[in-house]
Image: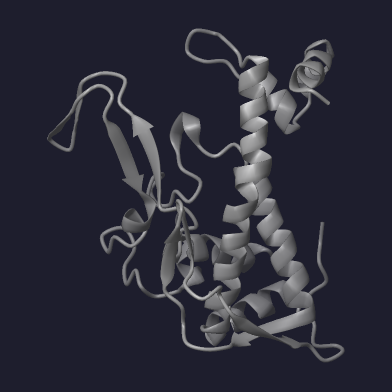
Length: 236
């Protein structure tokens, strides 16, 4: 369905703003001047969600399984928590994976006016890059930053911008909630049937476009679980 047709139909729906699907949320969004998205802007946002979102989520999945394979203690804690019917360590594991191996290297913005950042002049039109991978491994924010330790995310929440795998502010990734849900569902499903084990040495990150992927594909050996050994069944 063309973007104009789809958005026009939803705009005409009197209950549209009561719905919580992505299209309805975008239609209800307003900028500082009270203006909403045009049909062309809606199309671009939805294309970005469908087309751009799959690679980063797949990369996060690959990194998470790879890190679990090389950290059996963390894997054991996750399996035990899943078996107890909890999502706490699963979510902490996803956060820690995206902290240690950010799927995206940075987020770029363009200065709309002359300003200053950290004591440095930033002229209008200049590109400003927020380097996620650098901030996520800052020892002042994350003690022993090279360690894969999901339990660090079970305590008090980190500072708002200490962990930003989905970006932040008004332009935070529109697909963040969907990506989080996909990661949880797929990891639960995969771990219910198999256990990741190393298939080589731990891999370093390699830049592909703006995505930081495992240098050799994130290879792991998935060992099928014996009957009765499943940590949990996938949950909706």
